[in-house]
Image (cartoon, rainbow, N blue to C red; front, side, top):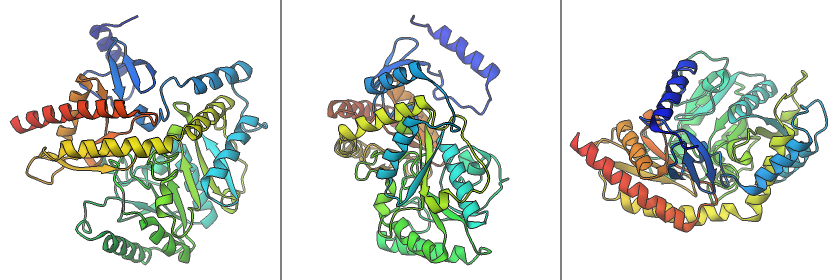
Length: 440
């Protein structure tokens, strides 16, 4: 039954009455999404939207993908929950597939229910294996909202406390176009960041546990270093015995188009010791996990379980989704359609003074907005564009420092026609927001 704007407003009031004030909602008039199909969703008032955000990169293949919904329904009809205390065929099946795809030799997989929990588990493994609570992280990074992952997050907008069980040291490299090295060539930039890393290691007590890094910073606004930066870091880390954790929660499964995993753009000195994943593999179901070398994964001496990680239902969804992704070459589609989309958006942005940069790769595209005539980030402009896009039937996300970047990450089955439609809608929204920003 179609709702009225008054019904939506009443639901918003109920939300405010029982949920935390920091649980933010998009839009001045928040949106209730009720169903979806393919790359489209509908709200409670019957409005249809082209979805260019996929529930924060989580609806990786498509809304209501028949292969996934069928797998979930059939497994739920057999048994929904068992826990890791019992053998689980779906969990072993998916783990085998992920191990084979990971590129990490002699790998093991531990399943969780989210990216936050996956990164939390990776930090536990690294600090236990290395007997150290020192962690290297990237500036502008985001790794989750648990106590330990907030402690390594380098993005002020998502860091509510300075308290942490870890000693975190931040190094340069995640944001290519800003900071003290922005004007350098890619080779000079990499060399400067490596020198910064070397210098940072001289400031520690020794025995740093790990570097954790997103190959493309997700919440950070889809920023990234030059290809090969983390390979150069890896060479330094290996000399010190420091582990490399690649946070693939947003970059994994082929979304960047060029690579199946983001770390593969930095593979000059081998794979990471660990990678974490979540979001897209479940196509909306709650799956996360860590892949690690057996030596690292098995370093825990205490007992451990996961009550909901590896659930039969979520594992069935993950297997069906992964099969669909591989059989339909969605990585190739992300490369082809994403390449078209980013070029269209760069052409639009060329005439707009408040667009500082259009960046990204594959179906992972960021647009950074600034106050016209300055290099100052403008979260206000980003909010204007997000609202204007919604009015035109397009959903996009926000991110970056202060929320001044648009995040565009449609389901990876996006067609050329849908990419062109979305580019036209976003171009219109950008122009409208630009006019409003110039007038204010």
